View 1 (cartoon, chains in turn yellow, red):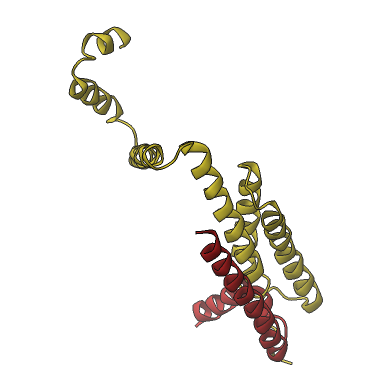
View 2 (spheres, chains in turn green, blue):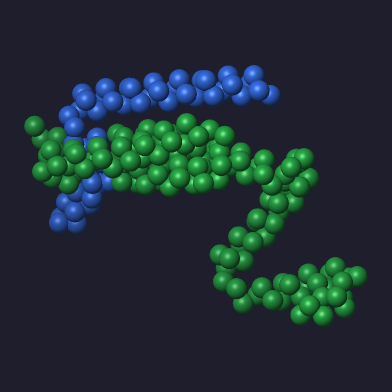
Length: 134
Length: 52
């Protein structure tokens, strides 16, 4: 494959055709995700000075804010859905080196608090579902 | 009929805390959470306007 690439390198359409042909048996989701990331990377390369790092950190900042909002809303409604979402997003933001560490840690702890609050309220009511009868 | 009851119980599980605590407490908590979110949104917007 390498030899073929060097042979046809002066015609970019040839390599692209070859790459497409190689990707054809891949399943739909993977094939979808790869061109999306490629276009994102070229977009970043055009816009910023240090493109990859800045955009990645900005993504992480958005994740931290999303984790905080989800954790806060999840205290009252949809604990089972929003709590784990806040946990995952907060951890992901910290792992990707966000600038807003405080917001990410707050979202992480709010996500944990969602599940703790739900467990406490369920234990107090002795029931998993509605108990507004009294 | 049993299907409707099961769906109702599942909804109660999905809603979570609001289905367990009394209604006035739910309203109070919703007001507090909404106020915090509003303050956060206003600060965020102001900060973004200053930054750019």
